[in-house]
Each structure stands twice: as structure tokens, then as C-alpha cells.
Amino acid sequence: MQTILIRRGRIIDTSQGIDQVSDLLIQDGKIEGIDRQIDPPEGAEVIEASGLVVTPGFIDIHCHLREPGFEYKETVATGTQAAAKGGFTTVCAMPNTNPVMDTRSTVDYVLSKARSEGAVRVLPIGAVTKGSNGAELAEMGELAEAGCIGFSDDGHPVADSNIMRQALGYAGGFGLPIINHCETPELFRNGAMNEGWVSNRLGLQGAPNSAEETMVARDIALAEMVGGRIHLAHISTAGTLELVRNAKEKGINVTCEVTPHHLTLTDEAVMGRVNGDDSAFGPLSAAAYDTYAKVNPPLRARTDMEAMVAGLRDGVIDIIATDHAPHNSVEKLCTFQEAAMGISVLETALGSLMSLAHSGDVPMPIVIEKLTSAPADFLGRSDIGTLKIGALADVTVFDPDAEWVVDSERFVSRGKNSPFHGATLSGQIVATLVGGKVAFALNSIESNEG
Ligand SMILES: [Zn+2]
Ligand SMILES: [Zn+2]
Image (cartoon, rainbow, N blue to C red):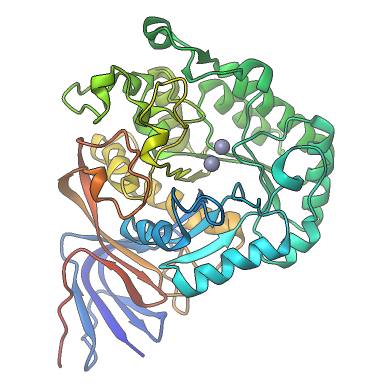
């Protein structure tokens, strides 16, 4: 098989505490060695990575591939191609497909699609309840056997507290997490965006922070009582962060994730403002509101965004996950209230996250940890999220400083719904390797004929 030498890159591998300029050798789909200097073996392909960062392939524990049932939004093929372009080598697919991934046959279908058409590794997440309608537990044992890495009714919360209690106990028996989309329906109501001064000014129905926090508090209380593993999807408020911090201090088994957009955007993006920059208008801004910034949970106030950044830096937040939620343009080309919720994230994740490293708010190794070794730990995997010798050669190479203008029409994802459309990001993926094979390359790779 192929031998690849990635030369002179800044290797950041938080699983081993490595942050140094080195060479990385890949052979037969596995990591073969890291050293200050490795001579290229005969016939090796050489990737010159001077000035670039080399890390384990990114792992996204939360994305929506939409297949089966919503292929007009995304497919396993296009979603995994978008993942590769974004530096992700493993993605976990949420079960809100049609049919819902609540049986072995649907999970098998997605896995077979991933094997035949996928550009990166796909790990399925099974539904908590049948049809994700919140009434009756799905066959979790069957789903675990089929390869599901956890359970979620994402898109909807597990609203019934007794169902959640049972789910935590049952999934805990398999050592698998319940991943909850925390939203108390009675408080969320028809919230189209964050409840605050922006929603007041725009005259849009807002969803308050407490819609998230009340369910987070409930889930933590249930986890304390039942045990098991609760994982809080896409947390977005300062109050949630404090609840998680206190729960962790008490030793309750809770983990949480944050999205790139909740770390970098505020509810002002609904007015077409990205990072306070009025020039970065979305394509729909002529309609006054940017429906591409409509997402659930909603983009919050600046104080919440700053709390997310602090929580990432100090370790209360375990993982960065994209919540990549592609939609067809017709689902966004409508009134703000009617527009679908979700952002196409995979191809802008690194570029937006690098703003945190460039500003000094979060050191780059922490950003990388939350995309690599931390999600690998969450999945209980020691063969990915690391560049240890013998690990799968899932590797991401990126230029942390390269500036590019986001044109979502050029996304390989079918979902063009990005509030970053038109914005300038700095940080670009150069190459993504999955099992030692190039899944994405920005430029052609030189071959060393020895
Ligand atoms: Zn969700
Ligand atoms: Zn989601």
C-alpha cells in the first residue's frame, strides 16, 4: 500500500501532548512514525507541510447526513465529501432521517451507504424513542449491536422526564450516552431566534435561555439519580455552562458540546452581521433578516457567546461538534418565521474556529483537542483522534493563516445555508487523509519518485 510522508508540519497531537515541527510517516493506512526528520522512503508521496498544521483527523460527533429520506438536503456521499473538505475524517450521523434510525435495518442502510459512497468514516447515532416521537423507547440493544455510538432524538428533546429516566438507565447498561437536544417545549414555543433586544427590535418571536437551561437542569438531576451518561448537545447559554460546571464538580457523569457558530456568532447575525461586520451580508439580507442565521438552539447574545468561549478554554466544554444541518434553498427562501432551522457547517468549521486561536481567546492546541482527542475519548476509541504509532492514518493538514472568502454556492454539501457566506475566514484545510488515503486535497500532491 501507499507510503506518505508529511514533511515539516507543526504537528499538534493532544493525545500525546505533542506540539512541534516534525515529519509524519504513514504506511499501509496506519501511522508509522513521528520524528524531527524522516527520509522519504522510495516511492513515497511527499506532502510538504512547512508553515502548515498537521493533526489527527477531526471527529464530528454531531451532524445530519439526511439520508435516507431527505436526499434533496444532503446524502451520505455529499455530506461525507463536505466533511473531508472540512478536515473531518469521522462523523456521527444523527437519526432524524425518514425512516428514523430506530431499527437495525435503517442503521444498516446508512452504514452500507457509508461503505460504498462515503468519503470519511460514518458512525450512526440511534433514536432514543421509536420514531423519535418521545413516547416509547426504541430497541436500544439492537441499535447498540448495529454499531450505534449513542442515542438521540435530536431535532426534538426527550421531553418526557420518565422516558429520559428509563433511557439513561437502559443506555447506561451498554455504556452508551443519551445525547439530548435540551429545549423545554413550553418555553421554546415558536421561537424563531434568541429572545433578547434583537428579537424585540425585529419583532420576531424569541426563545429564552431558560428554555435550554430548565431541561439541562432536569437532565443533570436525572443523571445524578440514575447514573448512565448524559451528553448535552449544542449548549448555547451562560446559565447552561454554570449548571454543567457545578454538575462536574459534584462528580455527575455529564459531558457537553458546543458548535463553531455558538462560539463565533451572536443573534446579531440574524440582521446579517457576522462578527460585527456589516459588510458580510448574507445573500438573503435584502429580505432584512438572514434566514441562514436561523438555527436551533438560536444564536445567542454576546455574553452567552463569550461564556461559550471561556467554557471551551477552561475545559467545562468537552467537545466541539458541528451540528451540520443542511437544508434546501427553498426551505430558507421564505419568511424568517417559516424558515427551516439549521446551518451547513462542515466546510466553514475550521475557518471560523481559527478566529478564536488568532484572537488569542483559545490557544490552538485546545481547539484541536476539542476536535480530535476529546471526541475520540467520548467515543471510547484509541485508534482515531491520535497520531500514535499504529493508529489509523486519519490526518488533517491545514493552513491556519490562509484567508478565503466563503462562497456557499461552492460548498460540496447540498446545504448552501451558511451565515458565513461572503465573510472572510482565515484558516483553510489543505489535505484530509482517511486511513492513509487522500480524501480531500486543496492542491495536487507532489510525488517523490525516489
Ligand atoms: Zn439539536
Ligand atoms: Zn443536530
